[in-house]
Length: 254
Image (tube, rainbow, N blue to C red; front, side, top):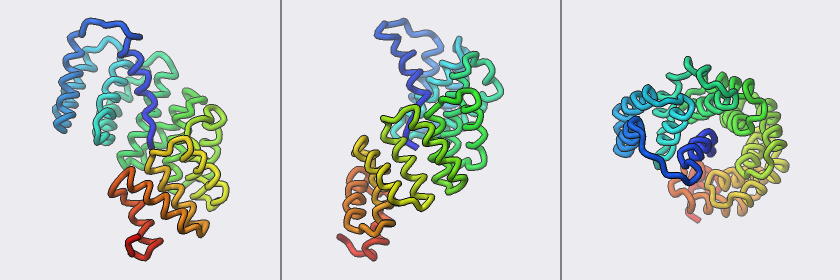
């Protein structure tokens, strides 16, 4: 799952359309939390963020900024971000704009999935789509999660096709479409979608791996190995790519 979504709103708000603004007192707490994250002091970061949210004048913006702080870290600590953000779910109705609440629930769904909370992500994605039926990011992330878990694949297919109907120029969406089709065993269709995805975002290791997996299923071993090498060049040590390369080569180095 490769999209951040809700964070984009925070970036626009924080940027202030190019205007410089004085730092508010609670912003110092936000910065303290960021500094704690940089040293991986997650307990300290969470405490600073709790104080920041308590003092911030707008819950929606505050949670967006905290989410951005977590996801801006190189290691993207999804589990810690989820643990922090989910505690505010009882206050979700304080977000007066339905689209904002939908974005919050989409983020919870995505973070729950990334954190391995497989029993929890469905409820959050469903809430997001109930509030905003056109939230194509939620559709995509929900479909991808289902595909990764290899369940409710027909539902996943409907979700990702709706997302692409709304926003067709995002390579990651075509990747999700292709991955769902791969899970369904529809390899020729998957190949078409994954080629579109790779053309759109050629420097994404995960997309290259997915394309390689489809080539392997179609018996196109050489093409699969080419894509795997590209995936590993982009992301050295990529476990799934290494595993598939070993399967295709019998453990022999190429």
